Image (cartoon, rainbow, N blue to C red; front, side):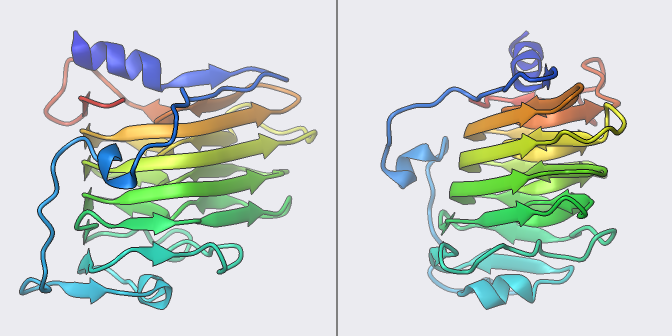
Amino acid sequence: ITTFICVLLSFVMAMSLCGVSATEVEAEPLDDLFLKPIVRQQEVPAGYTGIYTARDLTAMENGNYILMNDIDLSEWGSWQPIRPQGQPFQGILDGNGYVIHGLSIQCEPEQQGAYGLFSAVSGAEIRNLGLSEISITALPKAEIAVGGLAGGLYGIAAVENCFVTGVIEVTSNADFSASSVLAGGFFGYANAMHVSDCRSNVRVSARTKQAVYAGGLAGKAAAFDVDKLDTNYVTDCV
């Protein structure tokens, strides 16, 4: 029952000229936003590559990575998602209890695809990662999916003990398919996902001439079947 309620609360359709907002809370120490205690690795584990800077993030390919400190992106400008469009991340990112601050993305009207820290993830594992004070704005005239963590999530990707805070705003006067704009605090579009112990404190606002999909956790969850929790589940999320 808990899982079903979480799903119902997390995935909401925003209709024309209406905004959808995740619940906002007063500022808390960032470490307190993790739902499970963190024991940080002090050294890079065998088989992993350490991430120390924003440029280390941009160089990520498919492999195993671990953050070794907080990373500030507030002066970076508009972030280009990790991995090219159509090439989702397929590996492990262990945030190690650290936080990426100030991720900012401005999607111009001609841009289409998937946008977030990652463009998309597929069959990946992401855990113990915080994204604070994200800012994503989009003025789409074509198909687009935006989320703090990734525009798209596919292939039984597992996300555990992560949080996202900030603002996502999608505004458009263009005419296109009602399902072409997807916006969520974590993911724009999600399919075959395992999500647990995650917190979304993102104000998601979607205003268009027609219906779009928007929600606090994900804009749209496709092929989600609560009777098949071995392939799809959302548990203990707020």
